[in-house]
Amino acid sequence: MKSNKIYIFAALLGIALVGCQKVEEQATTDNNPIDKNGWKITVKASKEIDTKALALDGTTLKGYWKDGEKVSVYFGGTLLGTLEATVGSPNTSATLSGEIEKPEELGESSSLMLLFPGRLDEKWTYMDQDGSEPTEAGELSTGFDYATASLSVSSIDAGNKKIVTTGDAAFASQQSVYRFGFKVGGAGEAIAVKSFTISSNRNQIVRERTYNGSTWASEVGSLTVTSASDPSGNIYYVSLRNENITLDDTYSFSVVGKDNALYEGSKVIESSNLGNGKFLGAKSLSVSAKVLAPRVETISEEVEVL
Image (cartoon, rainbow, N blue to C red; front, side, top):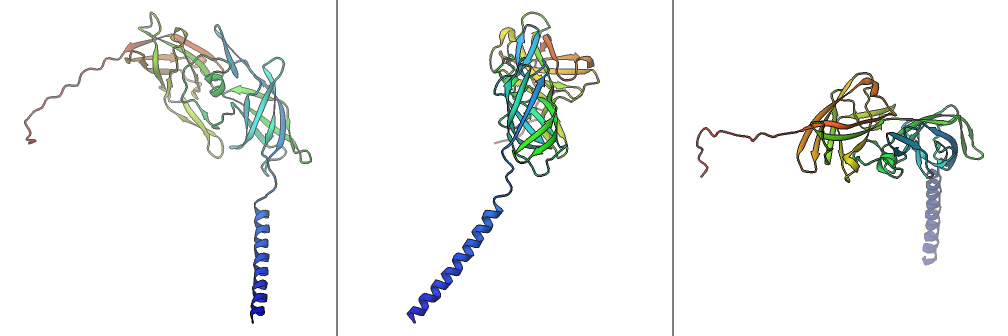
């Protein structure tokens, strides 16, 4: 009897092991779909002078590529990966290369969008700028100088896992760079500020952009710049995308000075100065101190509180 129990146990154990093995094999198969990663892509890139790594040369803002810059690759609204720049000659051109994911639906004639900069947080935002002067490694050029390019896929080389595109990537700037100096009454020295907020009477200043399923959509509103330092001459810089490009606009400014005083001012921006890829200055923007009148209330009758 004991012997029979052993045989029955062994038989049941064998069935259990076979069952586990089948489950494991099925799980392994389900969790390992066709490899979508590691697809190589290489493309030549050009960039207009108005953007990219930025350096201020007097009244000119010069843009160029630098080694190691990252560019995000999108198919629809899906991020496939990033490419890295190797600078060419002149440095307004570069070779972008790297490995990205390939969705099954990506094929010949598919359109890819390249977005610079390829930020680690994957955002397209104009918020949280610090007003600092453009430099090669500075916040403005590395985080807020957005530019896009479109590429068409010409062929898929499955054997070598390569995605081949047609032509070069010609990047276009997606905003303009402004520099502001705030002067009381428009005269004297520009004041040092803690922060300033820009709003527009057309209400088309972009705060950030996201993909809504079919296209990139913009959230608009006021934009606040918080100074991180005391720049030379108290001149502050901001990357600004205004989606009103046809009608004269009025920018309104609310400025908090280093003296904690509140200043206000405005500036008319003619339509000819709107659009992307421009470098615009208003270094003597007139502001006036905002005087807050004391609040006076009259108590009309006695109320028992005790």
